[in-house]
Image 1 (cartoon, rainbow, N blue to C red):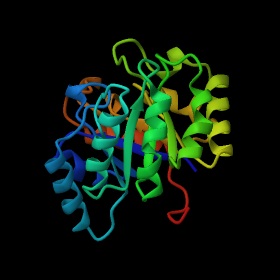
Image 2 (cartoon, one colour):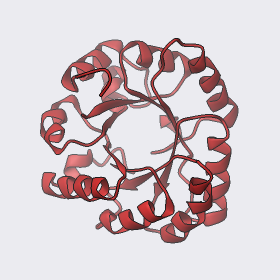
Image 3 (cartoon, rainbow, N blue to C red):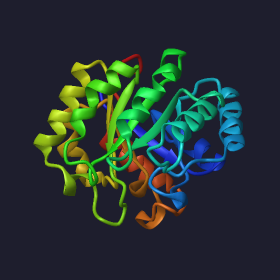
Length: 234
């Protein structure tokens, strides 16, 4: 069953997205880059707010657009996980030493941090080659996203066949799978048959399809309809 991930930029959007039926709430600052991070105190406040709800979706948080330097990556992941989110998302780029970053994060994963790797489809020619390393290091998931939000969405950079192979290989390694990257509502029918665990949205949720703008409840409702819920227990 594919679920709907909604990236939210403020506490008000957090509440709006939860009420609108998002299956996972992703804390991200779209004005600070592809994976712009909320400040740590803001993440902690969002966690406290969500814990007051009778029922809440899982919360994920990005750690920002970090250089592929193990010390910087491990420190920020540890700090973000300590805020109490359910998942920490780290972007992996081919520049620098992404393999060393993955290896350096293994102790954090073994201590319980639930880390999801974001692999940028417009930067990697073969992101799949990192998937075995992610599984070996104890990551819980891998998503394909895009780094350059003005250079077209995910389907401009990867074919359906490439996306299908990514999802299949990641799932075979026991990883949660997700697809994101300037996805539109019109992309959903092509992506649902691939059966990723999540489809992630920001731009398509916003007024005027401006990812830096405000979340639009009408757009969220349209995407909630396009990514239908099945059994609540699934």
